[in-house]
Length: 324
Ligand code: F6P
Image 1 (tube, rainbow, N blue to C red):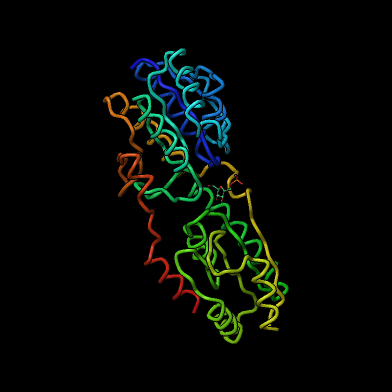
Image 2: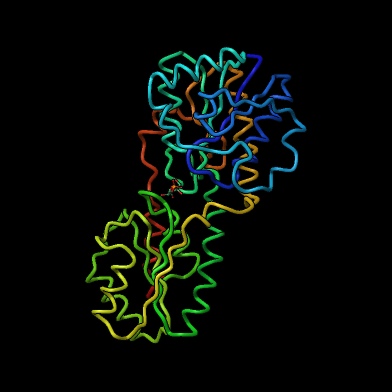
């Protein structure tokens, strides 16, 4: 293999730049050409390519977002779109690509591989940590730190006013971010899709914590939670059913995806980039690199997509005990 491409796809996450840098530098190390593809699969369809050498990726390891830009391409979902993309890769002499993204991006890569027998490799990049085959996706650690810092600030104002805050965090269909920041920031309750607490229990728990002498309360709500009410409806529900608290809502939104990556994410990205390129050079295709028991391992892409990233039950118990 003489030429490998790298692209970022789907929602961006901190650490993607560090991974691009790692892929480009590993290629340089092995004397292989590296091509950056702009705007994910859309750029592949449009032939939006840029050669990357070891120096062109300087100064990006500490930057949030992705210098290659990202997109969720509808056109790549069509056979015509993928055909155009394949023609562009062949024209450019690209023999394999590394896609940094989440399960949607991996599904696209797998279909592409099946249609054209084209070598593909995945690096998990998403703040949600919802990918099987890795304990950490790129950007997850940074997002946790970003959110904990923000909740600490919300706590300052919540306790000054004796208020209850519902803080909605991202995570798509899973509660990893909510559970970890909930424990890390000392939330009174954590609502995650993996466990339906129920409205009545939530109310009882909030009443109990008020009686036990708490002046403020933080309830972290995962965006995918299934309690049946969104954060604004939860506010109304609690205000109607308990007068003890004044309630406010804070939806953290996309700020959770930004910012300079943590040292953990930078190191992880560097390790994953090396492994992704080396796995291609071993002649393998359709794997995802991941962190398992502090080792960089590979998992078949189809397993990474189909498998479930499990919520940490032990941490759920810790959260329960801490909110006594
Ligand atoms: O997958 C990352 C993520 O930030 C999710 O947490 C969130 O549900 C979604 O992307 C938001 O997508 P968009 O940026 O397209 O609004």
